[in-house]
Length: 255
Length: 232
Image 1: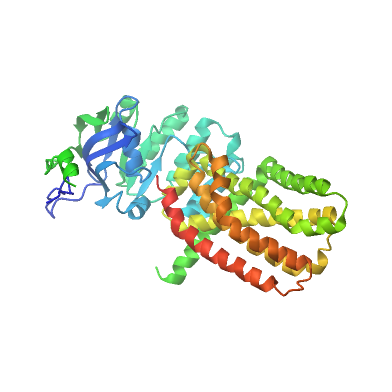
Image 2 (image 1 turned 60 degrees about the vertical axis):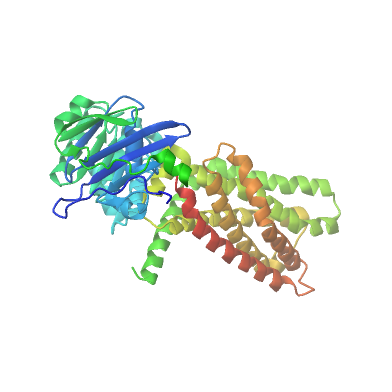
């Protein structure tokens, strides 16, 4: 009989809480090259975990998969127990993602950008939510300026402000300190502390290992698309990563 | 969420997207201005090419008006999606927890607004260059323009979504879109000609009905298919 399921779901006791993030052998190919080559990872709820590793290790790809921006080529990824590829519409309200790109509109002012985001996120009073977020990231004085005139650091701050408009259970940050001055770096640290105090799970991809590992509960080091090292609390390789129940190439050939 | 509440939520999201696009378009004036100039130049050049024969000019006017609208419209719908490629905005837009059809509708409303402005500015140009009495045919002409613009925006938004991630998007957009809007152009040109000629054969209503039906089908198909385009 043809075997279509390569990996089975791991058995889980109802007494064990569902992890905030669970990936099973998640892989992502771009053409013939693998950005992720089978990452199995679990992150407990309310933990802050650093993703470390050199350029090209797969950190950004993993975050983009969890943020529903990319689909895994193989394997599965779950946020709060929901499959990101199967039900992205249920994952999106739970996740806030700061990517390398800011996703801002140059011709809109800072306030208009955040009001638009607040509307898209379903905030009942977008103008008020935007004003609060601008104050939080120290851009009140620049609220009426168009983003086109902003420096890279100011754009980054504004993108951080957009994260504050959402009420996510999982925050994904890709190099959050990039392009920021000392004041901006302190802002990121303050936001990280705030999320942790509020019980939000945070996954931070960074090169600044020293700074983040001081704040984070645990860390995972990726290299060439796989997890090579884990440390601290809140992050683990699932104990029951199932072995393939059929050799993939054979399974495909049988089909 | 019940049907009415879902519809209200979708319309709120669509309006926010359309408003955002309109603001970006108005503030980036150079692009909008060059589109209008280009479309008006098409009309001017054809006017010169056809010569001073007023009857010939009046006969050609409906087709040339829609040709200029199509040229300008292609640039407009492409640019409205181009806005989203700046600094990862499209990926951010796709991540918002909203219905994909609401995003499509917002983009289509922005496209419709731009098309109506373009058409509204080109009508007087046609009247002056081709010696047409606009006032006599104004209601029928405006209705034709609105129905034509809705169909163009519905199809253009979808295909701009198809091509936005392609390197050769400027070439691919007209290649993909023009065959699909052929029925729309035929109906719009015929309806415009009927409106300008006083509708002696009583065919205006049939062409307008065809336009309305086309608009409805394209809007529904676009709203259903656009979500797939936003996925990676």
